[in-house]
Picture 1 (cartoon, rainbow, N blue to C red):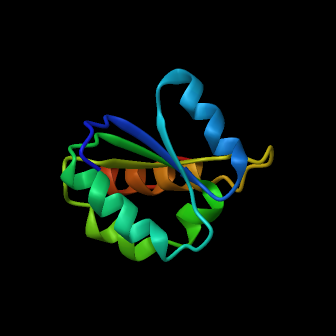
Picture 2 (cartoon, helix red, strand yellow):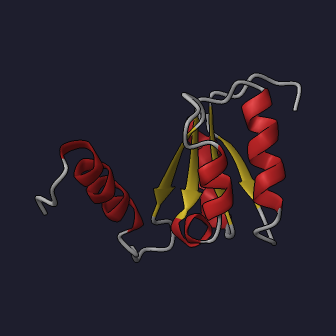
Length: 105
């Protein structure tokens, strides 16, 4: 990946390709095992934000943990198939609870 990519989206369906229209580099994957390699390459190229299909995000806890203490890339889940698993809301809830010490939701 020699190009400079600031924002990327990774998904399992063609719906992720819609992000191309707004200048986001997209990757359609078949196997979740591909995510670690793609994220590492994006990290090396200086990518700042990586969006994931919620289904993928649920299955890449090892990748999320690997980059948890890095400033970049920021790894964010997005519902891409019309229905949401509330993964993003759960992540925000956990971060707020960790920051202030209590669950306010």
